[in-house]
Length: 212
Image 1 (tube, rainbow, N blue to C red):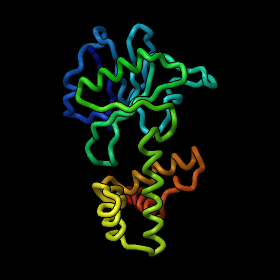
Image 2 (image 1 turned 135 degrees about the vertical axis):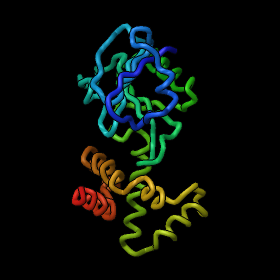
Image 3 (image 1 turned 60 degrees about the horizontal axis):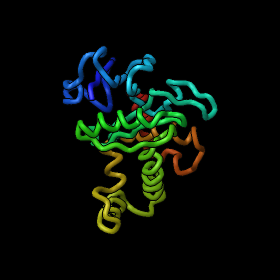
Image 4 (image 1 turned 90 degrees about the horizontal axis):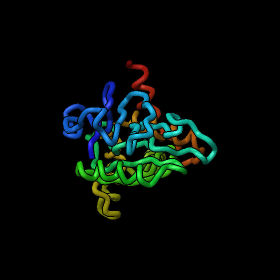
């Protein structure tokens, strides 16, 4: 699968030095185009056009038609925990009328590069953030309420629940301010209490803003 990358600035999915960038070809020869940090251009002749997403929905780039949207333009984001290196999981975002052939082309491209692919509908937070952010915020609420220390919460999750690392240590390593921004965006979209950012992440975001 031949692909080309149109890039401006830094990419969260493929930072500078990632071999996926080095293996890209020329735009006119490519079956798939990837747009990183720059507005995409429609091209119905390509097997797939991939738009890198941050916290926004794909519809912000393509527009929406009340359930009738969908083309060869799809979204993607390689999951990473804050400032940690990107994981091997790529979340592909499809719309209601996205052709299956477009998803197949994108999946083949990433899997050939050694990445794992999960496909989801066009929802804020996609799959992972919608699952894990309420758990992280719950852990911070327990800490704020004095029910347990950070160490006790993290150790309990690792030893009793089998987590590879505790929720608080994971968020702190990735960046509290980053967690705040993601949780805030989800809370504004869905209004679900579990997405309300924990107090400590609010403080971290405020300190970041003050010291800029």
